[in-house]
Image 1 (cartoon, rainbow, N blue to C red):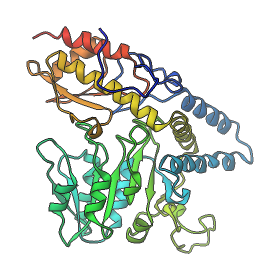
Image 2: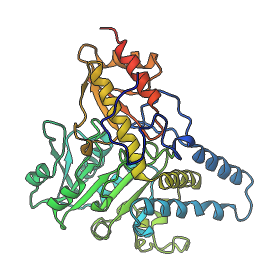
Image 3: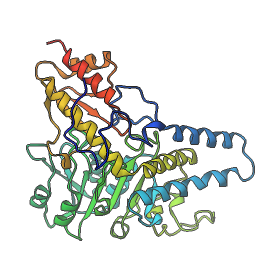
Image 4: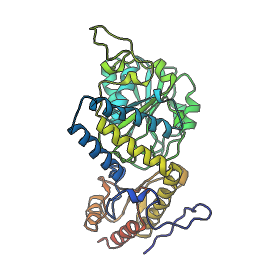
Length: 389
């Protein structure tokens, strides 16, 4: 069975049954893999880069460390280009998105921050920990009936004490794509917009420049492997966030060991705690360069096509789609439930058919990428239509 799609291909292009040309060939995940919202299997480019850098480190010479550390700049440059050509000094590498959120939470000394009530836990704990130390206090923001955090909801929740809004660009549960530009407009220039881009970076064309502090990990949609990520800090963020967690590498003249406290670095480098692995920096660079080569627009279009096909497939099998209806409001995630069967049982049945998904107590989550083929959609159809009732 070949599912129909509500997504119109670009002029002159036919609907694709394979992965995205020029991108999908770099990957080897099996047919049926639909769990990119949890982990994105890395490309051969990432594997080759990692192996090459490990081999280089295994035969270390006098210049090896300096040569390996050049991967950090390579990754930051690639991230800056992906963000639309921001200054490379506004970008710093992270081992994960959580580290960046802790920088934000501990960098705000007072006031309140609006945080969606149903965010992923990594977006809640930094604010809770900061509040316990008497710093910024989180205020829970309930989504609307469709699970969305809209500009109007944010506007209604603002108070004179609000110093920041922190949210995910793409909701991990439903795939709802936040209106970052609209939220930026309603909070005005006197408040910070802090964005976790984990579920959208590299696969959704969003106005990332709306964010004052943007953080992301590389292990999901960027497909760079674990212990990779980066942050972007605007001039406004650099002015207002205290570098509370700055380490020895986040200062001026970090290589001068004079037993004195040095001034913090002028750019996003001030959020550095210590040297990160140049191996993972190289892996991140390779992943980002592959996204750049394929183009975010093309990646997004392919994902939109597969997502629409998965939505059609779920509905044709009697399922209920919990993700947004409008294409412009969703990313690569399709949340759904089968009304007559508990979600864990559906997950087990899909696994028996070779379909890899995220299963939660009350719903399931497909997440397709630009390497996802129509054969995967057909496999889902066969699994769901054979579901015992």
